[in-house]
Length: 156
Image (cartoon, rainbow, N blue to C red; front, side, top):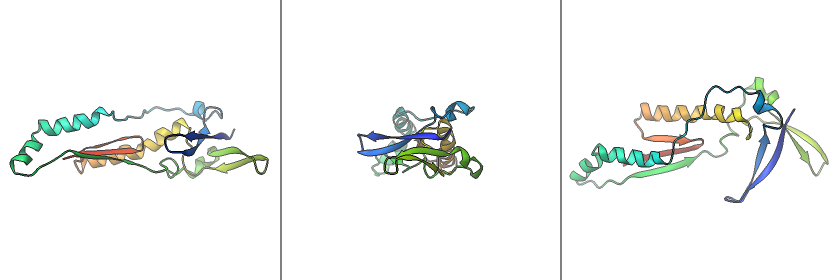
């Protein structure tokens, strides 16, 4: 079965979002997932700030006359699922069906990026942010994390 597609209006940004129904097509039931997504909690921000204060990094900086404040930010990956490619061998499983009201018939499109609505897409997408955070933490010693496609950084 092709993926059934419908649109959902998002009031918070005034945009329409295409949703692919992985449940109805049987895609989600056919997937076997053995990993889970690890996400940070909002308490992560407070924990990082507390750690900086406990290590007295802020106090040492103030003794030298340098005024430090906690700074942080959140970057959102635009169209995160759409630009993560599907393996060429799996494109036959990435067909979306929709009804074209102008032509009055069903149309089919191959998605070359992840379908928004597949359970497996969440896990497959999440590999890249996990790797990015691991590299930033281990090699760059950067206090950062991610929540799906939102990347958070915080430091003095």
